[in-house]
Length: 617
View 1 (spheres, rainbow, N blue to C red):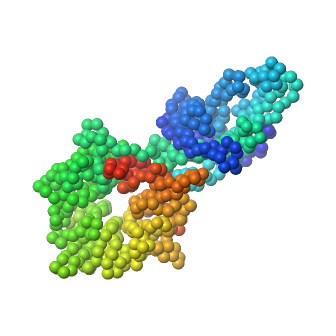
View 2 (cartoon, one colour; view 1 turned 90 degrees about the horizontal axis):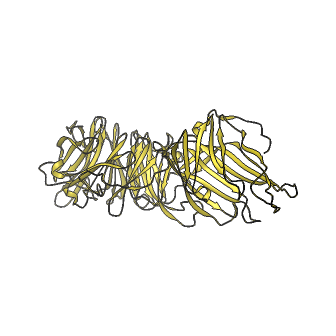
């Protein structure tokens, strides 16, 4: 063992935050073994899943394939300011394994701090290396050195600060026959610890079993961590199942529609399995891990007594309750109030729109809803036909939590002989924004906005962007703030909207050129993506295709989730990677529940699945 270097700066007064010990937690590592050295073309990939189980004053840590070897379990404890791992080590092939306490980290964590776990002379190694029928002696040392702090890019989180620690095992044999010493055997295990997470990367370099070949190198990097109440990346995608005792069995719903988030749960609505869409709606309550904890089917007459018409169900949160809306006639829109579980009607249905000129857009939709502190904003398509010309325009009305009108109907856009498709609506405080595509007359995406205090028009813009350079355009509530996204095959454009509906751009930039930039943002696959907002930032889920792992040799399809950063133009900063999910999820909705996103997907039959994506602290 060499002399200790001069100790440097203190990185952490206490090592406790760097090595998370938590019963039930799961760390999933992506591993790459290069048996013939770092630069050799041959490699093997594998997955190592590490779990913790309570054991005495610490945990038992189990890995399925540590460094691509057999499964292994070792007790770990925090004792006297140090993390101790008890390892079974055999110092020769013929010697029995011995329990050795290896010091992984100790407090305070200082640069160049060097500490020994073993430094001893073993007179009888248990092995005869020189063939004289006498067991030889062995000198062995295991010691660690704190290298310093480094920034790592993980598969599902970039620029993670971690403490790098090198642990070396050095051994040499003293031959009984000649009294000489063998060359020193040395292996190096490097470990990176991130505060609040634990081990985020490990690398093992050891002499090759085949003489003359470079050292065997194995690297593991953290892909996902499920810390039960916090985490990194994502949990596995699970098929939603109705709980025992509910009125539904198997799938709780099909063709999921809106999903409403609360602090610790969410409520999803969809079609009643195996029934026509006009029969009613299925409502499922999900816990914070995406598990369905309650589910029931509502016939249309349960929600809206006396009606034979039911279409376009939508759901939003109002206070600590759920509101379900539906078309209940050619000119009627109604609302019913459910509790926060979605399993109980708390107030009967009321009619919130009765408009003889209520029409549809080109996608056969007619209205959108959004809630604020005082109630609900409803926007819908107004349409007329005089026998020769059809005219459409947008109107909106504000109602309170019980559906009572808080003012007159506001005209959002003037009547015009235009098509309307892909209609979106977003609400933020004093502004209600709409976007849609008009394919006739002057084909373009359009944006309109009203002042929610006065109902007056703020803007009605022809954006001059067509589907040729923006396949899908969305208005999004950032909570607070409004944004607009533009999706095409090359990437995602995103801009904040100011109070006048104008895009907030980088100097000299255009709306079409305001694409989000990141090395992990690959070409878009499939649809436009799903967007939401939280704490003034855009949250997005998009389908991508390309090389999922750096060492990959073929393209894959996967789902990428990210949010934006900073307070200026959205394209000014690299987005923050949240998770990449493979195989890809057919995302239908995103909803924030506490410190995580519930990603709501659907399979080819419309059955719901859920994936938890952890948000950074």
